[in-house]
Length: 120
Image (cartoon, rainbow, N blue to C red):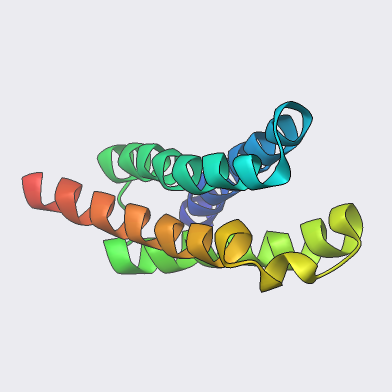
């Protein structure tokens, strides 16, 4: 149970930091600029978090970790952000705003895990 909780905490911290980027960005820039900053920040956030996870814990293999991290982000966006904050699922029609960050989160987590696993 502790292992599952640690993986979920890492994923939720990443999701929260990505949400903070969007929240702060909306108050500073246009939505398009905010989404561009988010698409750059999201993989960086998850590369750092997965680096911490794989350096200290490494309970799961890189591919499974990438699936879990990405699935948690997708679930939180679909179950909380869209219905309660955005009051719409329109965000899922945006490649820049939703799908590209999901893909980059997956790739950043997977590649970070692969790199750290090779060097260990």
